[in-house]
Image (cartoon, rainbow, N blue to C red; front, side, top):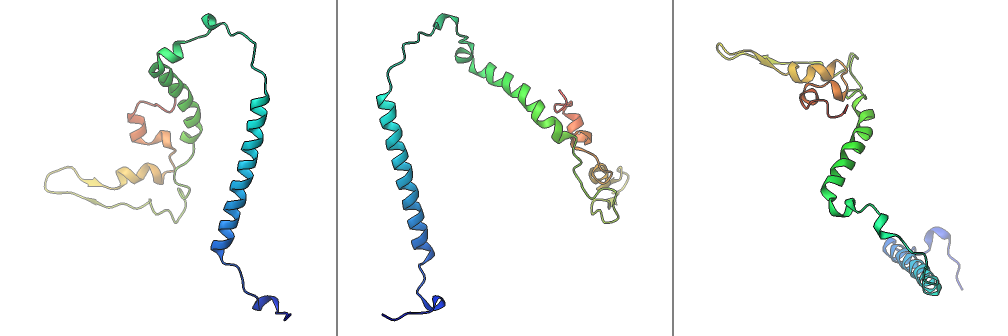
Amino acid sequence: MTSRPRHARRKESRRAQAVLRVGLTVTAAGAALAGAGGLAHAAEPSTVETPVGELDTSVVHEPQETLQYALEHSAGGALRPVADLPINPMAGTGSDPLDNGIGTQVADFKPIGTETVTGPLADGASLDELPVVQALGGMLRD
């Protein structure tokens, strides 16, 4: 039997290793499900009676209203902290790329430039201080 140094041995391919890992994972999951199935089969049926007349069934009969209520009350709480974060972390520094602007005027029309859009970001505004969000009526604050 010839002995080879470790670096000269033939290595398993990555595909073979991946197939082995997937096979072991599937086997472990199958064993877990088979064990849980046996336990579920051995359980006795529940004898607790549920008073159906006392349950709130409006969620089942009016799902659209329930979903709208949940979204209105959860979105505000989730988005309020995000609204206070500054959008541009480089605002107020010497290397802020948004602190530039270019404008133009055609004939007698009002001049237009990019500072209208980039100005609030260059000043370090947070999300709720942006003109677009303010135009939405403060949905993040309600």
